[in-house]
Amino acid sequence: MSVATRFSIKGWCPGALRPMLSGDGYVVRVRPRLAELSAAQALGLCIAARTHGAELIDLTNRANVQIRGVTEAAWPDLIDDLTALGLIDRDIDTETRRNIVTAPQWAEGDDTHRLSTELIARLAEFPELPPKMGFAIDAGAGPVLQDVPSDFRIERGTDRRLILRPEGRETGLTLTPGAEIDALIRLCHWFIASGGAQAGRMARHDAPLPDWAQDLQPPAPARAPLTPGPHALGMVQGCAFGQVRAEDLAAAITASGTTALRITPWRALLMLGADPGPQPGLIADPLAPELTTEACPGAPFCPQASVETRALARALAPHVQGRLHVSGCAKGCARPGPADVVITGENGAYGMARVARAGDPMTQTGLSADDLLAHFGAR
Image (cartoon, rainbow, N blue to C red; front, side, top):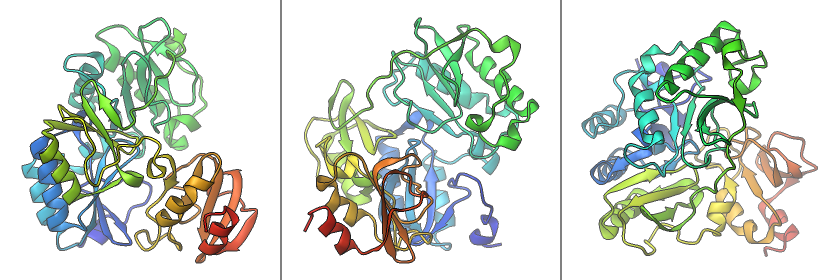
C-alpha cells in the first residue's frame, strides 16, 4: 500500500509515521520531546532533510519541525534515519497522542520539565481524544504559550500555584502538587464522557466543568515570547516565515558551538550554550518582516494555494500598518485569527480585506501582486 493510500485520512495532525502530501512532496513532521533536539539530533535532521527531502526544515506554531519535499520512495529511508536519531514514536497512535507543546525556557527538574516528562510517560492512560487535540505545558513564572493552539493547559495561576485551564475558559482548576497529570487525565475522561468528542475541540465544548473542578483561578500575567537576541541559556535565532535551509542550520549549529536546540512556536530557535552573534541563514533582528508577518508556503508548495505568498509578504510588510497575513487560500493555516490586513488567494488572483480572517469575504478581489504592491506604495 502506498504512502498516499495509507495517509489519505482527513482531520488529523500529520506526523512522521503519517505524513501529509503537499505541493512539493510529503511533509514529514517530527515532534521533539520537550521541544529539544540535541546538537547531534539536529545535525542528523539536517542531513536527513538534505538526503531525503527538499533541504528545507519548517518550524511549526506548536514547536515541531517538518522536513519538506519527501518523495514516496524516500520516505522509508527517512523514517529509518529518524528512528536511529531517536525521533520517532513506536506507532501512529502514540505519535498522535504525543501532541504536546512545551514552553522552551524550561530547566532540568523545574515544573515544566517535570510535568512534560510525566505526561509523555503516561499517555497510554488517556482516553482516545479527537486527533487534533493537544496539551500545553507552560509552568514557568507566567504563561508564554497563551497564543499557541492547545486544548488543555497547565500554567501558573495568579496565586503562584499551578492551574489546569481548558481552552476557551478564562480560569483553571487549582492543582495539587504531585497530582497535576492525574487531574489532566481525569479532565480528559470528563471531556469524552460529557460529549466532547462530538465538539472535536475543547474550545467548542460548552459543557459545565465537573463538580470536582470548581476551585478556579485565572492564569498569572502572560510573559512575552522569545525573540531573536542573547538569552540566559544561549542565543535565540529567527527563521524566515518559520523555515530554514538545512545547510544553513547545520552551519549555524557547528559555528556557534550550541549543545542543543529548543524549538519554539515563534519562528525561532533557542540555541543552548551558543556563542552570541548572527548566523548566516538565520535572523538576528526581532523586527524583521519575515518574523512579524504571517504567510503560508503558498503556491507551488501547497496544492490548496493558487498564488505565491512569501515574496509578496516580504515586499509588503514594511508598508502595511499593523499585522499582515498573506494566505494562499481561504483556509488561513498561517494565522487562524484576524489580521489588520489579510490577503487571500483565489483562482490565481488575490483578495484583500481589513481586520479579517483569510476565509472572510474580501472587500477587494481579482487583484494581482502588482496591484497590491502599488496600493501599498511598495513599488
